[in-house]
Amino acid sequence: MLSNQSKYAIRAVLYLAIHSDVKNKIGTKEIAEKIDIPAPFLAKTLQSLSKAKLIHSIKGPNGGFYLNKEDQKKNLLDIIECIDGLRKFNECFIGLPRCSDENPCAIHHVVKPFKESLIKELTTNTIEDFAKETQKGKSFIFLK
Amino acid sequence: MLSNQSKYAIRAVLYLAIHSDVKNKIGTKEIAEKIDIPAPFLAKTLQSLSKAKLIHSIKGPNGGFYLNKEDQKKNLLDIIECIDGLRKFNECFIGLPRCSDENPCAIHHVVKPFKESLIKELTTNTIEDFAKETQKGKSFIFLK
DNA sequence: ATATAAAAAGACATTTTTATCTTTATATTT
DNA sequence: AAATATAAAGATAAAAATGTCTTTTTATAT
Image 1: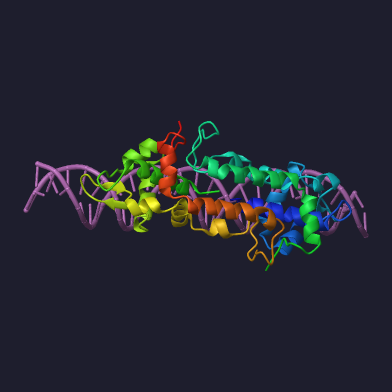
Image 2 (image 1 turned 135 degrees about the vertical axis):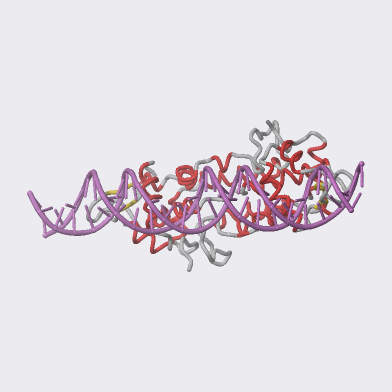
């Protein structure tokens, strides 16, 4: 479904949502260790998110990545869009170039409702919302 | 979501469901042209399906691929399982190794219902069912 | 029997994704 | 101002997915 990179991005952003703010920046090494993903690849990933202003960063000693208040209000589809693009979500399940409601592929009507509701879930819930559930101990972003 | 190969497999199988039977075998070239996908890659794909007995084939002059009555009763998840495996459907949306109902990832509860219903749709409808809708002109397996 | 047409099998090539390493730029601290 | 820690950028490497080509096997038709 998602690329590894998008998965890493989501986990890293949720980690930042829980543990960082403007006063507490976090480096790639810590994040990579805590959510158990390759550090150099994560660095690349966070750079992309930072360039897109979905997260923020400061260089130098005591620098690192963090989410500000606005960043917390973004949603997971913003993250996915930045890393993978939305093609995956929009394109036809069996790869027809012009599949649409008017000219549906053989399984269009079976797949469409799930796509739509999934997108709705990923856009109406904020990063903060997901982070809060994890902070309450109701869900996890790492599991060994 | 699905790999290209799975998408090709589904389209090819639906093509065979509509156009083939034991008396009317179809070669890779015809299928590839009709559903607009690379012929050699399709050949590989059909060989895998054939090996798994999800479709059938005969070598030699007038040989080719076809679906028998039993094959028509199989479902699309069988096809996907043969080509991609089911890992994609079972694994955690954000890549946690031990994500489960008891230890859910941060978005487990948001994603789970869609996965389950999608799997249900892909298993309860047969290949024949999808083919019939296409034969009625209500859906397509190629679209230029 | 022989020739032929098709799938099956296997080797090869390309592209994309994933991952790592090195250098550069920049804030911060001393 | 200098040293340092960190992100940013860029180059390289490895693995997986996608796609192509060649050879072998086998059923059919002649």
